[in-house]
Image (cartoon, rainbow, N blue to C red; front, side, top):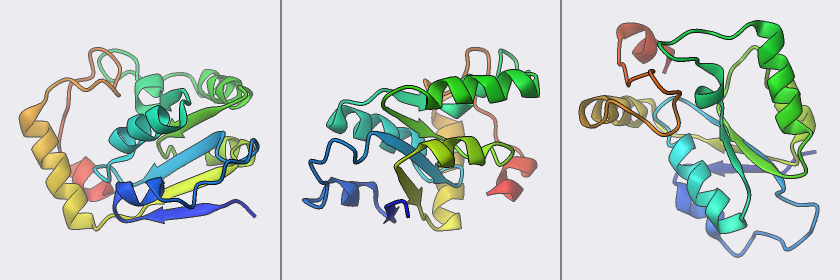
Length: 149
């Protein structure tokens, strides 16, 4: 059974409960709704644990919101998951089996839907470009995204 950290507030992960076991929290999958704080949390956790962070949104989308070929997307994730240690943030419901089979820890950011919507709207108003997104994929907020949340 994988350890599951259920965090309503990202700071809760930095408690004294983190074990100093060499096999613990080396391959971390972070999941949650859009606007839940996955990318921000992943960066902070990566700094705290000295682990490389991979944002699936940045890797999936090509410039101007072009999707990759499915086989290429699967191969890329398998390659990432074969690394010794990592944090991967994102959902991508077509391929969770790859990440979940390879990780030792899953962190689910269980954030209220209205908070996620607020954060997504705020993010779209304040920033057109995100570091966790591919170049040429400016922030966009539309009905489909809000419905997805």
